Image (cartoon, rainbow, N blue to C red; front, side, top):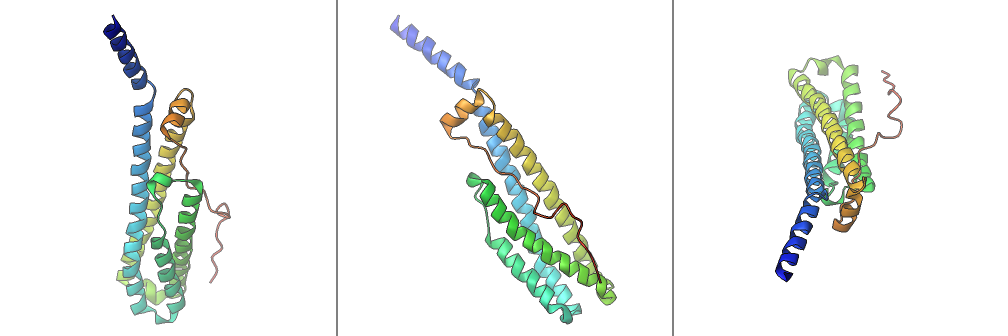
Length: 192
C-alpha cells in the first residue's frame, strides 16, 4: 500500500511539473538567448565591415580623417562592450546600446560627409560598402525587433499566473529590451 501511495504521489508530482510551465519557460528563455545571439551577430557583421569601409574611404578622402577616426574609435568602443545572455537586464542592454548608438552616429556623420564630396560618391568600392553598411543597419534593426518580441513573449510567460510562481522557484527573471535612444523621435537635421 505504501509503495502504491508513493507511486501515485510521484506520478502526480511528475504530471504537475510537466504542466507547470517550466519547460515552456526554458524554451522561451532559450529563444531569447538565440535572438540575442542574432543581435550580436548583426552588430559583429557591422564591426567587420567598418575596417573595409574606412580603408576604402581613407584612400579617396584623406581630408576627412577626423570623421574616419571617430568611426574607428566608436567601433573599438562598440566591440569592447558585450552583454552576457544570462544577464540581459535593462542596464546592461542600455550600456550596450549606448556604445552601438555612438557608432551609428559616427557612421551617420561619415555618410553625410560623402554627400558633401561628390568625388567620393563616384568611388564604386565605397558605394558597394555603403550599401553593405546600410543593409547591415537594417539587419540590426530587424534582429533587435525580433529580440524584443522574444523578450516580450518570455516576460509575459514568466510574469503570468501560475507561471510566475514556478518562475520564482526556478529563478526565471524578466529580461531587458532595447529602448529607443533619447531624441530618436525627432528626425535628424542634415545640412551641408
